[in-house]
Image (tube, rainbow, N blue to C red; front, side):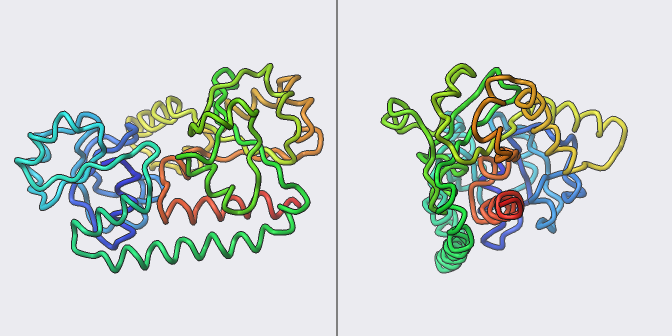
Length: 296
């Protein structure tokens, strides 16, 4: 399962016995999850078997873990026949998936449909409460630019369509800045060039999402070799540092209104794309409040 699915399982109060991540951040079994699984590890009380990567989970390790239920992404549809022989298997849409639909599907599979509704109601209430907190900022600065990149050479413009990073911000009342031709495409994200940034200069605020997961894997592997503790602050820094440095050195980016007025904020992509459910939503809202509300 990916972290997006693990998150929903934990939100329902169910602990995993095995886990396959979508980033290689740990080798060996998860004998100390708080140091080995970003954000969610503090909520895990078991010591899950490491199944490898979510796209190619270890069938041998899965068999040995003797699961009652297998949860996975639709990337595993070609392996469904094999997986379903091990245990009942539920495959969910991961990238761009509907959090509510996925949560309800898992809750039905574990016979906890009422708990799913409680979790969803709580999540929606937190968004509603946050909308009230952001009301004055939205009124003063309604237009927000949302970009994701590793190092400015692979800019992606986020929308609210099948994109949790964008949809939560839109739910707070902000208007996401996109060119007309992009807005009509209804895609989660759209590649753009640095030269296209001046066309987005109507933005009042900008949130830039660091997505340098290659560096994160290198850091995590090095930490394993050195037998160091997994450092979440460094995990976030690895996602952000290249993009932040490149943005601050780029003349076109610095000429934008948001840069001139100091209204550019950097956040790790992982907290909203990697964790699009109730736990990630709370983390994301807290980060938005911390950065946007404290500086305006």
